[in-house]
Length: 73
Image 1 (tube, rainbow, N blue to C red):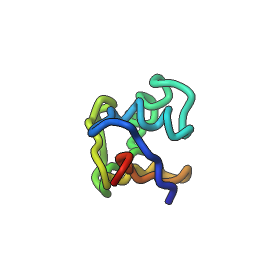
Image 2 (image 1 turned 90 degrees about the vertical axis):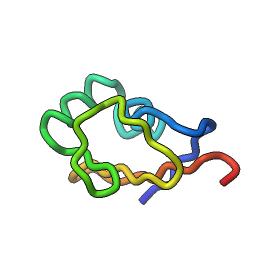
Image 3 (image 1 turned 60 degrees about the vertical axis):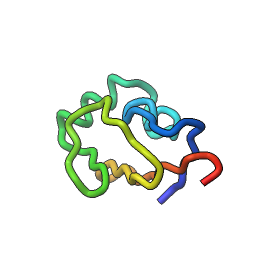
């Protein structure tokens, strides 16, 4: 699992995945959500604007996983 540092208290799921380099666009996130490939903290996610916070773990099936780390934590 890769730790990805953010500079804010929260970040939207689609923005986080772009920041982490997991996807190139929000459109890719939408398709992955429709295909039920994205999990947040081991729960299937359906909202691309889901707010993530420090410690949350995002997993994309067969691609990888990333943990949100708030700068300074």
